[in-house]
Amino acid sequence: MKKTFVVLLSFVLVVSAFAFAASNMVVEETIGLIPTLDPDWSYDTGSGEAIWQLYDNLIQYDGSSISKFKPMISTNIPNEADGTILDNGKIYVFHIRQEVYFHNGDTLTPQDVVYSLERAVIFDRAGGPSWMLAEPLLPEINGAYVDSIEQWAVKLAGVKKFADLFVEGTRTPKNSKYKQALIDAFNLLAKDFEVKGNDVVIHLPHSYPPFLYILAHGVSTSSILDQSWVESKGGWNGQADTWWKYHNPTREKDPLYDVENGTGPFVLQRWTKGREIVFKRFDKYWAGPAKIEYGVIKKVPEFTTRKLDLLRGNADIIYVPRQYIKQIENVPNIEVTKGLPVLSVDMGVFNFNVNARGNRYIGSGKLDGRGIPPDFFSNKDVRLAFEYLFPYKAFIKQVWMGQAIVPNSVIPKGLFGYNANDPKAFSQNLAKATEYFKKAYNGELWRKGFTMTLVYNSGNNQRQTACEMIKFYARRINPKFHINVVSELWSSFLDDYANGRLPFFVVGWSADYPDPYDFEQPFYSPSGAYGSTLGENYIKWAKENMSALLMQSMKTVNQSERAKIYTKMNEIAHNNAIYMFLDQPLAVHIQRSDLKGWYYNPMRPGIDFYSLYK
Image (cartoon, rainbow, N blue to C red; front, top):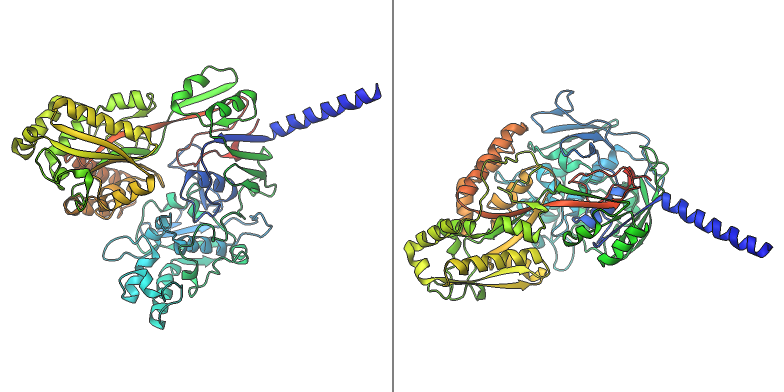
């Protein structure tokens, strides 16, 4: 009898402990990986979601808003009315919060803020996010923003490329002149910052309207770090004469790759790479302890497993692909929130001058029915024909299960500068597509036909379907139009698009920060991430039609004036059929109904565990 009582008591205690743990823990199951915990390396949603829990920024968004801010490490939101934004947006004053503790017990200082922003610029890993702070913080070169501190070092040294400054295979400058050029490049950055008591004053070399967005929570590279702790881990010591030794590191050799010491509401408890990460509540958090004690993000590749875990209460939030949403809707104790606009646009890209050398994707390379000429898409009539060829509504219905909208420009709905009616989005019209195909090349294209290949990155079913739809409707209106569709691994796809070998391809762009410039510049600028790859004819067109407007949009902090400029740019692009805008996805959030406090903000990477409770 006594033994039975002990066993029963043990069972009750175990159940009670599990119930307590479940009420104090939130588990999210998803499919993504976390590549790093270093805020200056992070440029992906998986890392960004983890860093969100661990680190703070100067300011944060006010709940669901992407236009209103709340204080964070700074106790004020700089503004012109109280004199904390001065000189037409060139000077920003931040009052740094006192008695803020890093997770190791160190107290945050204004110098930590300066160090963090400087490190973000000098870190500058290849393909990383450093450009976001380099553009506002470094002076322009020849009237253009500078995306990397390397550009100033190269200019000051008078060399052709950054590697020319160093002894081959080392980080040792070749001579004293080159070393001084490196130091001088850093000093251009360092003179932006001034510490006055508890204030950090930032003096920008030029106005940069999105600057506050770039400093906000959600942009990992603007996270505030503990300088002394980073140094103790073997990181940069903050000095001008050493920065290049810590520039563009490899991921695993980065000393902050798998450790953290932020001021955020959670401390890293455990990171099992490729499987899960566990956060524990930081009780000395300046805004007060979180309501839950633990947050967990698990990688669970199979939807069936995620679904069962959600239904059983082993997971509180799960990722559900669109094709499976109906399996979750109307299930007791499960909440499904749909139609959440994502600040992202997918589009088809016309290459105005294809790199023809050894290029199998353009066939014969001539307008002879067996290929296309390299400048095929320099022809405006050809571009317009393709615009009217695509079945936009069917694509949204069949591929996105209705969970997307057709965009009318690079600016997604929900972002300031978005204009629903100007320009009017293209829609499928096969009669108009036929008209423009017949008009192109004085009718020669219609008579001879063409052969070309469309390429998508392997595993992306939406992009594959978009290409297959173009192939189907092109063949339908003229049997002489031959389009092949092939896939490439992501690395090969990136290499081919960057080197101009793809005549047409489908890509997407998601907001780095919620400002139209972040969308207009990559696509419309002749030096943009995509614009720069589209050949000499596009670059010439963009310089004549877009460059001046783009720079003009950044010379004023007045949002209504900027919005008018972007509308004008979008009209020009629409009238010239520069891109084929396919979709703006709508997000879906699925959780158990006993979980409270969740809110949607499109600039937040993943979940804000601090807001959650049961």
